[in-house]
Image (cartoon, rainbow, N blue to C red; front, side, top):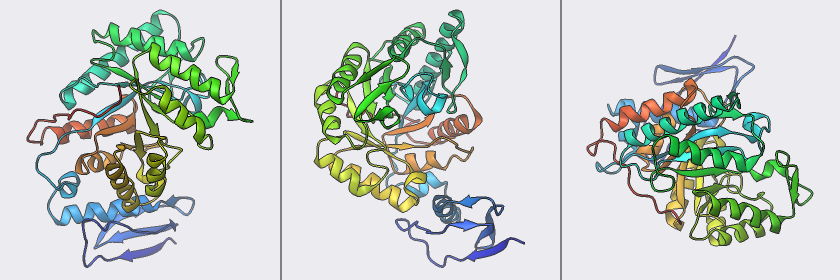
Length: 359
């Protein structure tokens, strides 16, 4: 029989949302509300427990979670970052780059941003279908195409933006998750899709050429996390062209974010509550971003459920960007749809504030 753990919260402080619990084969009950029940084979992460406490606090205050977290009434929506092509570990290495994403930098509001990205996604599907290159979707919903190499994916993105009737860079730009850890071995970068390998300095030059040839404005994890020298070199190489995002480099850790900002490695960082383990630590990482001039991007991960709490965190915390995958697959669309419902309740009608990107 599953063991029952009862947790009672006599006081719930808005900043203090930490629960440090790993439970196996237990049920969690919060003030009479059964929050989570799992089988003995599953582990409930501390993040889920923390979110359960936070949701209960918002319910007790008769507020949606995003409003409960907010410290102002003048709320804006985050800019969505939406996967169009999936590669790397998300698509069994069809191409080496992990995510090729649409970033609707010119969109004035949430609905327009989603509409533009949907148009780009469908245009990409038409292009791939016409060319006989459509093979399915990756695990976050982006297309899994049969293409000749990494650069072709970038060229296809430009074609899809234009086919959607939009202007590359001014309206929709390209964001990349390189996930360079995945192909860094023996102090070289091995691109299987291109049948190439590069020394770190040559890789920096190669990737910088792509960023200048195509409308790329965000590059996540361009170098391996242990290759800090070339992380900094790449950021310098694309100054004025693209901003650099840390994920594997900083792992939603406040001190790592501060260190990376101090060392000139990043302009932005992903904030993943289920990466760092608690909502409190995720908030600390976001605060570290704000304190160091780093752009925080609240992000989901692979293997998601349809829970949309991440959207509430992004809006309530006023994160400038949100990354949760593509506009297909239920676990992804649940989050974008929740964003639309929240946007409809905001005084500004879901306006998106301009980003401070280096391009």
